[in-house]
Image: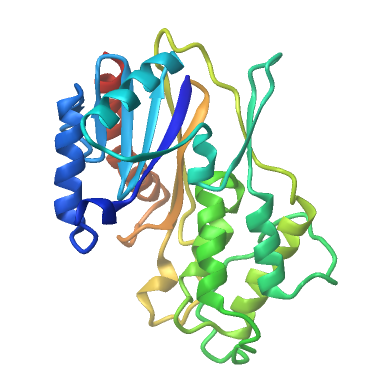
Length: 298
């Protein structure tokens, strides 16, 4: 699959202060050149040969043949749009995409973002560690106050972005640390520092995709949960003390599409109940994703 990125300057159309109006404007142009908006995702447009993803003023075009994308770009320009075209969609996410033409493997890395995290945490002189976390984090109400030598929320944001695009292995560690973004203790800062030390030792590593043939689509879903994983980490009177954690990974044709690790909202009364809730959470992603794939694959 080939891809290109289009950047559109909203100010050229007098719509800079009105994102909604600009969206309707862009939608009208896309429909004019043959796209149909998906009923499952308002940011997804599909034509006979090209798939278009829209995020504000960024547009990603994908097709099996680059000529089909070039034809769409020419049609949009003929419709009066001024476009800045990038031949590499990786710039949209800041992800380096390395393809092995012999094996077909695709590796996604974000070394620049990892360097920013290491710099923000001031851990250039600390040793590396083998894992991003070693234990569950609680509120630590009586713990030492945060040193505040770095912006906790900012580092969480960077790690979360890294986790979502190229480092699924950070899911648990990042999720539990993010709980304390607004009132961290020193123990929570140390948990972030450990994530940074782990990234320091795996700076050049990333998500490895092994895509299968696209003449048909297969979905694999892996779900798991713990039971009362936070027990003993919170005050006994705090309902969070008995919360369980669920997680899932969804793959399409061998490629990781969605991964998640989060506390289950309900209080599970058994291991089976925890597994049931984790499966239910995963299905909220599976069902719409399955419909979306069927739409794209037509």
